[in-house]
Length: 216
Image (tube, rainbow, N blue to C red; front, side):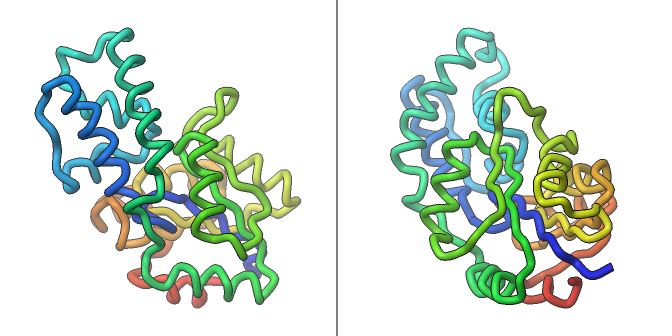
C-alpha cells in the first residue's frame, strides 16, 4: 500500500542536537567538579530520554535518586534556555519535509525528548511544516521502544500500520517500529552506527534524506 504517514524521530534524525545536549550535560558536570565527556561519547548516551542521559553522564557512584533528580533539574534549567543554540537540521531535511507536505503525505514526530523541548525545537526549525502531532516524553506514556506513542499517532491519524513509515537513527527506533507493526527506516547520519540499525532489524537504510522519497 502507498505510504500515507511518515513518523519521524527527532534527535539524530531530523535535527543534530548533540552540541546543545553535550553543552548542558557538561555544564552540570562542571558544577560538580566531575569529568566531562566529548560529543562522541554523548552520541552513545542519548536516545532514552533526558533522565537516562543525565544518569549515564554521571559517575556510577553518584547516581542516587536524590543526586539524579538534582542533576536532571540543573541540566534542564540550562538546556531549556539554550536548546537551539548549536542544534540544526541535517542536510536535506527541510527540503524533504517540504516535499512530503507538497505531496499531501501526513507527518508526525515521536521523540523520547521531553514534550516541551520537542515542541520548541520543531517550532523553531520547521515553522512552515505541518505535523499532524508532535509527541515527546509525557508522564503517562511509556518511552520508546514501547510502541505506545506510534500506536497513538496511528489512531489519531486513522492510518493503517501498513500505510506508515517510521524513520529513526537508533536501535530503539527500529524496535519501536517493529513493535507497532510499521516499516522502519534507519538513517545513517544520526547518533548511532549503521551496524546497530542492521542488528535491530531496520527494514530500510538510507544515507541521504532524499532517499526516503523512493520508499514511499
